[in-house]
Length: 385
Image (cartoon, rainbow, N blue to C red; front, side, top):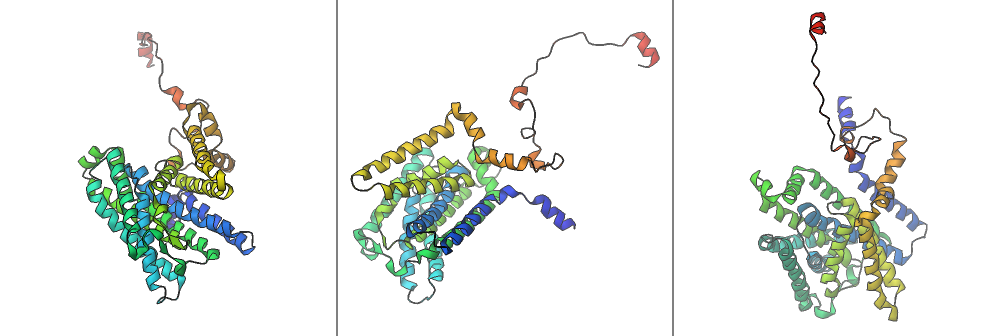
């Protein structure tokens, strides 16, 4: 009984909300797909959302949790897409299962991208801020131009992958299972002692180094892990399309991934999931609805939407609206009626979480008035008062 009581006390629902949300969405889509309610374009959109989530969550490791700015994430995706899919084409005739081919190619593509992340990270992570961003941006441009001029990968015409194109009706299921695996690895990494060391480096690198944390080791570790997941996302992308071209992995795509991280919140896995879903959906809808002469309006409308989202997320005047209309506030209203006053867990009993009629910010200062100190008279002393 003591064992189960410890499990119950250590269980926190907030640690599993991302898994529950993604798994519930996957079950819903499977039901809709079995009923024939999902069209081909919907299946394509779901797969794009899946690998966009992988890209956003992996970049959030570098930008949000480590605190370093990287603009070469599309370059690692490019490496994984070309190498992983080239490997998949080579073993597709020998391995009969398309699922096994996809899994093996994701591992190979991710490992090769991780090696590139190690090679680039060794010199680049000595830099900071804009300098690191410029180096990683240059890496992404160099990588895609190298693949563009290699005849082994199709050259400028691109590499044909129709031979390994996965069944679109089940591809999104595999993709969302990969998302769940990535979330499991990333969230457990963040909550481990390694994750605490990474966030310590972000908060104060000098203090972290003084406490004996291997700053260089952890920076390289995060960079390599993020590059691995970007390579996996590249293989996921390659199994959907019939032709991989280097134009897909331009610096604009790296910036788009960075936008997902920034809009979702630096260091927020849930925010990255939501932002990646919304931005991918907006891009998909605009791409399908605007064609011909109206295609030029796609980037304009996309930019206006992003500006409005940024203003809503950061404008001080809109803070009351943000506090009133957000997911956490809605969740608190739903759970408030079911929560008993005595059942307050340790993490919910912090001073800034306890409900009060007076806001804690108003108790930052207290005015004292000087008055004559009380001294008991002789009669009180005799009576023992």
